Length: 639
Image 1 (cartoon, rainbow, N blue to C red):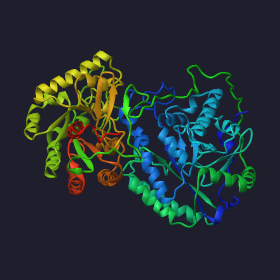
Image 2 (image 1 turned 180 degrees about the vertical axis):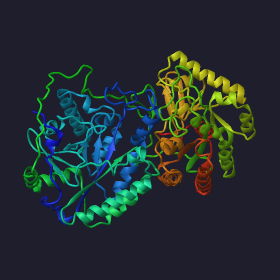
Image 3 (image 1 turned 90 degrees about the vertical axis):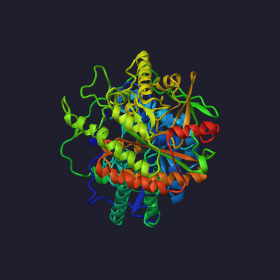
Image 4 (image 1 turned 120 degrees about the vertical axis):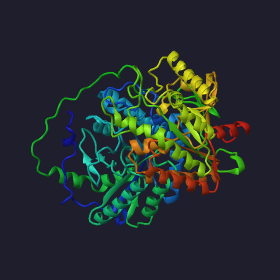
């Protein structure tokens, strides 16, 4: 019989509950859960949830944003864990381990624990029947154990997905805890058909995903962690509490976030009443010392009514399509094959990149100003991002607010930003689409007079390049954009940034065919690297989503202060890391209609001025980075 979710966790009020005593008399058991995940480049069609709702698949910006965690972020987190004595409980997608054996080795060598987190974070449990779910759960647990050498004792569903059957299956497989149930500040019993299972509360509130889903800066996130730490330590003096800090290697592993996380860990290690433990240790202690007493207390509570049980559906076979099959990957010493059709130059994760930038600078820093053309009435059959910014939300046609807001950038904001950049010694780099180039000839003439370095930017922000295009249409789109820009600008752009980072899986190869030297759509590393196909290769100058003003200010709703403070912190962190791990790069994308507003421009001016004084900074452009790498044999790229 399948239990109703409420029946699985009998109500147990904190008041009057038998107290928990942690080892050594600690008032708080604290565990840190870094999620190490892989998000599919082009996930299978989902009936319940679209993993990439921002644009047609593939969504290169968001895919590469998350891939950064496996190429860079997890090593940065691992350094913090070791520095501050944190023994993490890695929440792991098993498929990620096959793509990144170095991450598997890092986890195997850590003094922490590991819990299952599905195969991919775009492959949800709630779409499976019971037989399929059991096969996937067993495969996940077995693969993680085999690849890390660690016993898997707990589970957190990928994308926080689970079914009514999940607790029973986990118990059948011999696991001791499930993390989705964020309904308490202590572990609690979960009723299952066989064996014992406990809820070890994960967290949505102290989850760094808030930094991409809510108006929350790294500093605000850290402050929330410290406030919760103080409160639970106080309450735990009577009965021990549990606190989880949930991290993602692609979020907290970013250079501007890591220092704030270090501030939290530094405070934690100073607390002599905090048991810094793994989830496995907390669950084991609870099962041995508190489970039976707390279960009796819960079952003794008065209950109004009881939800009816329903028969369990049993499926005798796995669904067609090979659920439970393991992903495979071809690995070479320099280039690797992932789940997109290019060989990718390996990241320099632990060993660094080697080489230097000109004059032995540590960090190549560049600002790219975007000039986007907005169709007041989008062309028939065109695609635009669901995150398209401007105005107070989407309005019916004609959308005066969005048009006027964005038009401000072409009329006023772009000049304000370029003046600030020039005054602080940064090259002027502008990504321009072909519609802006043809419709604003006076603007183009003025920017040419100022010596702007141009990057091709498609046709228009409301005519996004995407996988909805046929091969012929996409080839024509790229060709026409480049030809128009070459004619109007009197120079052929060397680089490319798609409108709103739009790409199909064919785009890099088509750009190679068109003679484009580099693209800036991908944001999964701290230094340039190469993509290779049968037709040639193209450089990637990474531009991380978190250093894009539209993503940060308009979508994430960060304050301008928080965003530009993060840019400065990132630069300082990267300069510091470069001394040990080799040179780094940082590209910041800004919109004249957004950062070009008067009040925001003051923050922009303060940040660029501070960066100009930072020792080790090479104020440069993406094109200059690639020229240097080519001239020096690419020694700065990942080895």
